[in-house]
Image 1: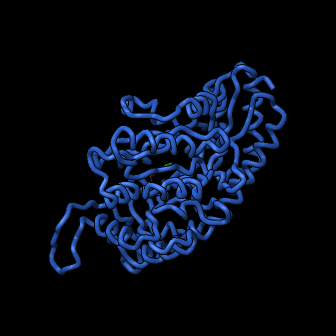
Image 2: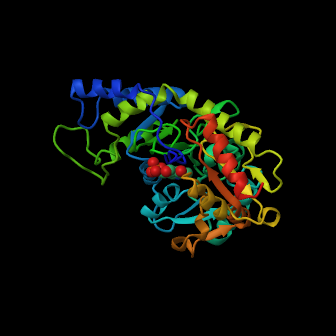
Image 3: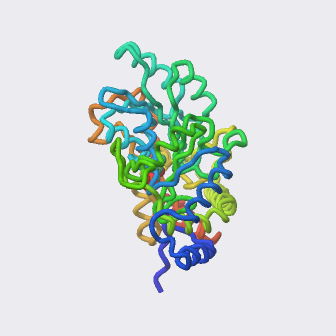
Length: 378
Ligand SMILES: Cc1ncc(COP(=O)(O)O)c(C=O)c1O
């Protein structure tokens, strides 16, 4: 019998979700908001220790709402990590803003703060003002050194919107990932550490931002009995049914983080001592959720590319994935500025994301490692 496919990071239900969804059906709060959504938001606010949150249809929508509230407009520069997923930065383009990408720090693969400092000064020289916002991504579970970023950005009064889409459950100096900036966004997409099928969250200490985002997310309907609009909004709110899935998932967030970290530990054990393989470094100030375990394959030593390994894994029905292709290498951003670039390019060339789903058994991790080692003739 063919071996069951091992996916990169499939949804992993706890079994509790159906009870929450059943409650929603029995109360008929199918349409669109309702008590499950309120509860999901309250629980997330407590988990993150961030007072104001709004749950929306996806992480990209959450970032768009933040950019809209910050009034990003044509001509405004927004600086963002280049090593990220496009949903982190496309909202800047929705607003007509101009993206300026910042390379990664080789120590943690997140935005390099020294390069950010350099880019801000260059932006002031060129345009007469600093960027209107900065978006650092907490990559694959690794938190950005947010204290360093906010210390720098506060000198110029630049709001920092942290993209923690991949990093729910990670901690930075014992604080939740995403806490400490002006705002943060999270994703509950099907491949994330917990999922609502599709969903996102915007969180902030700024009540005005979150209240405005909540209004924008519901077609900017004013709080009057009839439909009255003074600005254009979107249909971005999370549905009560999906929030019910989220309630079940939140119950196991800690278990999921533990399992992802354990999978990461097992890969490190199985692949230890192979010269030419290294793992994404975890910075000392962060406990990563290890959403995906990412390795680097050194071609000069192993004579294999990540694509060779990916194909070998695929031949055994194992899904793996290249590291995000940096934004400054995307054809759509060919004319955008980049400060640095070489570090993320090298990570992209050498990187491979290994299957890291929390439903993987120890034997699956061992099997993936064996196939990987065989592909390297090890
Ligand atoms: C770094 C990053 N930013 C933004 C997003 C966008 O989230 P969503 O897919 O929920 O729109 C994702 C995930 O998909 C992501 O990985």
